[in-house]
Image 1 (cartoon, rainbow over the protein chains, first blue to last red):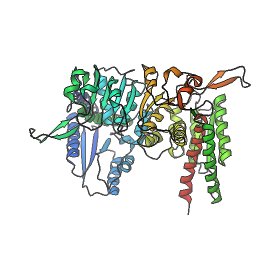
Image 2: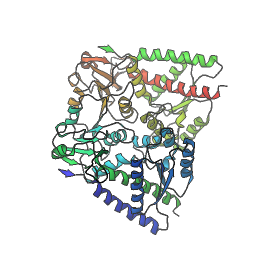
Image 3: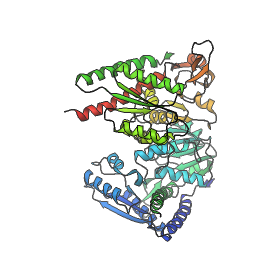
Image 4: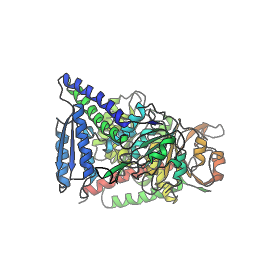
Length: 296
Length: 296
């Protein structure tokens, strides 16, 4: 059994990104600049955004955090989005989800200029990705693709079961795994809350990508020997023995599944770090376009 | 075994559309207007475009056919697209595919105003459809959805196998069948040229949607009793006994599969007529928006 080490792989990627940033700045261009809008005081959201800002600093990006109160109106938020759309000093930006219930997330996401949508949530980016065109792919799926690639995991002709059909993970993941490319060319089955006979589908899977947000949902008796496991789930479980008061648990019961797996991502330290580095990579791609456009 | 009669169902739909058109014109608005650009003299393309124009006439639409020589340059074609984008008397238009090899199809499709893209091929429409937003869905997949709906075919929790991952049929079809709606909520597996163990996957299918363009590819021994069959394939096979010199053959071997099927589409007279009526429906939707915008 081999651990798909997202922490190490993402560090390798960050080093590569940092190298390219230093080349960009050596040539006299400003470094890539990622901005993030954070609305309200959701604890998990603050943790995620801080991790993204910290990652920016490590690779030499400029970063800007726009914090707004959770009483901000939808129109005010849309104004902030438009400011960042227009701001030529910003290469890409994200609006951290979830947003307060009085704001329509879709309205905000579609207001982002697709060329700055480094989260890859805008319908135009999703459509372009689905059609095999250049696009910002959503961070979590593209982080997983990168991880499979770096470990040379065979995917062509394999049966890949994607657990979950969310707009930001399961659905785009299924499109990437079945496209005509590497990693890809897998026979993909998407499972969700309506799926029957889930056990037998999982047992036929060569690759399982679990993104349902149910702690320890996939157990050892549900998988076959030699399976490749990618665990996207990350749920906080109360744990009084931890200093923080909680621990992070994936969708896969690591202890029972790992002994049967050929490859498996741990939680934490698997998909999470890859997601953040994919955001950096998308921002770098946006910056590359800017450099190319302004190069003499 | 029940035939999923696309010819009859599409006629029902055309009648409903014609009724709405007469309501629109009675109120003093102009009828929906579909334009089509046809490049060159491909026999099948001419047949398809003519069928679309004829369908427009039947339901009271205005239609315009723009014919261009197969030596037209990409820039000239893009100019024609832009003219139709700007033409306020046109509600929607299509560029008949395939285009000559010297023209990049993607360049042309992305030049179409998404609000007039009644073929649903623009990345923005595909992305919006994938995200469950209002959008023009591609004509063939939405025709199939309509057919399943009109026959009250159960899809929730069913195993739906989509054969083929094309950008205009297989891929969008898989998204529609797995979305959280009816028809939909199926557990969807997408199969393609890299798929192994296709026979056993097909035998586990409750619903098979075949779109690979290989005549009689699916045979009776590959399917289980009670399966629902949707046959998108339509290949011309030389047949000297026919006046036309050819006959149309689907991806499914009707004679061996039909006796085991609960529901099955014939070829011709199944998916084909539904595709054309979906194009009409998209154009009607575009016209509705125009009427709403201009209503006093």
